Figure 1 (cartoon, one colour):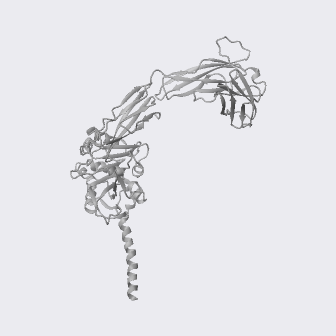
Figure 2 (spheres, one colour):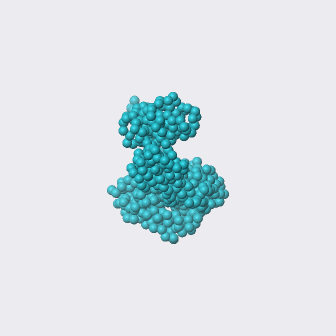
Figure 3 (spheres, one colour):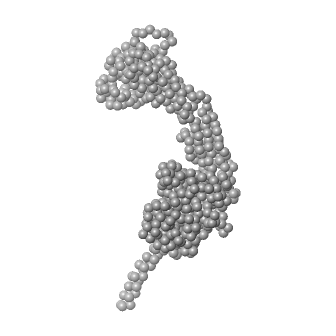
Length: 561
């Protein structure tokens, strides 16, 4: 009995301890360490992957360099590192435990040192060496990234004359606080170090030109260097939240999956060279030509492997159509005047990718000309007219109607090429149409509208718009035409049910014959229903809705609430 009890107690104690050990062994850990990695750092956070303690394998390493605001003593100041960027994603449990690239599963070690002062490339190299001798690090897969000051440290370490670049598989500098010079760019270009740099377009603290200059300088030295940049359309300094979000992807990869596409071999070079991309050069067209083929067939894989292609628009007017966008030769059409920018991204079978940009300029064809329509006479009691403007010589046009002279009038939709003008009194009115295109060109034209007494004599060349008395003399509810609902609040449904095809004029008048608005409906044979919205300013009461199709005129009663 005593032996059984003793054995039971031992089992009861050992089993929970074993379970605890296994759980700790297989789960990823995020630990604070007040340990010096070198003279400029007294502490860090370590993130160890699943199975780190029980596996004999080595792991890829991310070394994250923080911003200037997180400088600290490495002890009590360490928690400030958790407020931003990659450390925040890890601390909040939003950093995936595994990443799958090309069918292989990878787990990262992540090291987050806290520097006392602005780190030098030698300080960062000290962290690299500490990690290599202390952890199960894959020396061919050490990646450096950082934001702001840390982004600058990332650039500076890779570009240093100390040769530290030979220890790095790839870098991701984020809004990097590092000024460019040619010697820095040459070292990165000559080593073909993979770079994915990000920045905000209107960063108020660290100029986006830092990133532009680095990438341009590297590509000027080596056009096939595996480097790219992503510029976010934002006006603050925080480019890190989006960059380090595992859900942010470009060309199908987040930054972690992109990193894993590169490794160093024993000779210190990337084991897989990315594709060399050619977008076929910039294009210029003149309207009416508005389509072109973008030809990326000059792209190639240095290892002669298969390639995939993706064309995307990154700038320019919103109007366009893209076909065959996942082939080497894409067609863009339906273009308007302006300058477009398209990016060709090419990836190889190992997941390495490169990009090239093509600028397509569409020049306006011919002279922009506005047409406000022919001058017109309108006879009382009709006191409205439909202005029908147009313009030629460009596309993507905007319009603006204004009154140049005359009495009080209401232009119902002044920014449309066609608009009602209502509530005019006897007299002469001049209206001007201004047409503009997205190339900044402007054209104007005027129309004169004369409101004349009903008994005036005119020449045969005048356009006469009569309003015969019989059109408003009585209210006739006719079969096949109806208003619903009636009474009307702000709009009603007009149903027309007959075999007439063509234009139906819909005029709303008060009982004195004063016209409030005029609309044209295009009707086909059979039944159609049109929503009519009432003009502002109409008071409650009884109105007449006059329908005129060809020589036939019908009048319906309408009660305005």
